[in-house]
Length: 144
Image (cartoon, rainbow, N blue to C red; front, top):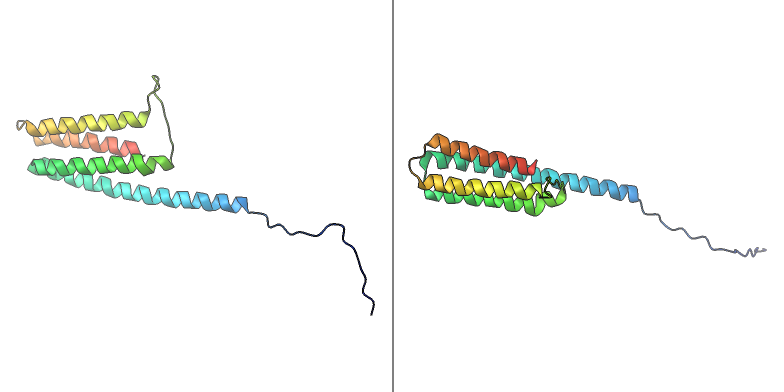
């Protein structure tokens, strides 16, 4: 039995190629699922804010006002902290101001106005509902 002795000049190396296209697809899927979960969570928070706003307009108690403000601030913390970090949609005004910060400032101003209106017992519930609706609109505008 004769064994041939072939000398190989270069060893064959099988280098597994990373499937970068598959990784990108997985990352997109992961990001879309994360964004979907965030959107659902934000919609639940907005619904809770709406219910608390209606309760606030009906009963006009400072305890309800404090809870409403806590819910709004929690929503802002959630959107600015995680939701908007995933979707970096930066838009600047003519003066170079960031749009999201402007909306957050408007929401804060509306919360202050709501607090003042609550302290002024002469305001009607319709006025409070209008202000609560404006705050809700700004919140929806923030995460869409």
